[in-house]
Length: 243
Image 1 (cartoon, rainbow, N blue to C red):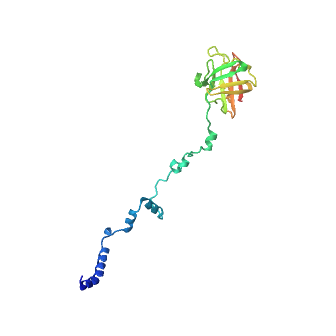
Image 2 (image 1 turned 135 degrees about the vertical axis):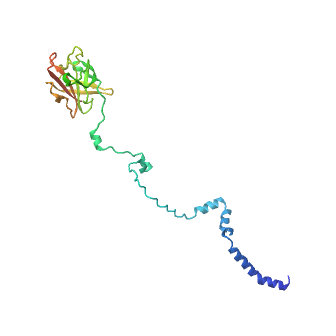
Image 3 (image 1 turned 30 degrees about the horizontal axis):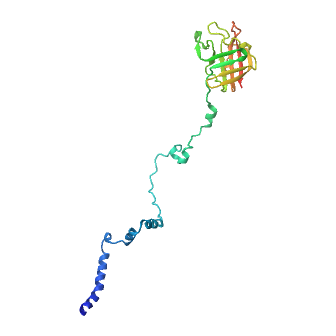
C-alpha cells in the first residue's frame, strides 16, 4: 500500500469506528444483543438451577384491598373454623336442656308380683266419657292398665297401674292385690329391660282422692283397684319405689 494511502487510513479509521458505535447505540432495544441472556441460555440445566437457588427472593406483591363483604360471616358456620378444628365443630347443648328434658324409657308391657302370683300383660289406658259426659279412666280387660301421661318404668315420676279386683266381663287381674305387704317385690318389664320396685305403702282411700295420681320426684309405682270386692266403694292403693 502506498505511504499516502496508509496515512489516510490511520487518520479516518478511528472516526469511522466511532460513528459505527454511535449508530449501534441508536438501534431499537429489541435489536440490542443481551449478553446476559445468551450466557444464561448457554449454561447447563444444573448450573441454571443452582444460580436460581442462590438468587435473593423478592417480596411478594401486596394484594389489592378487597371491598368488605356487606354480610358478616356466621361465627357458628364450619367455614369459620380451620380444617383441623372442623372435626371438633359441635354446638354445645344448653344447660337448661340437660335439666329440663330427659330421654324416655319404653312403656310397660308386663308386670310380675311373685308374692301374690301375679303375672299379667300391661296395656295403655286413656280417658273416656261416662254418663252425663263425665270423664272417666278406661279399664283394661283381663290385663293391668297403664294410665296415659304417667311415668314409664325407671323414670322419675309416678307410674300408675290399675286393674279389676273382680269383673264378670273383664277378669280379676288384681284379685290378690289386698294380700300384698310392705317389702314385696314388683317387676315391670319393657321391651328393653326389667325394672324392680319394692312396696313401701299399702292403704285404702276414697274414689275422690286424686292425689294418688300426682307426679313424684322419685321413680314410684302406684297400683290401684276397687275394694271391698263386690261393693267397690273405696280404692286400694299400693305404692312402691324403684330399687
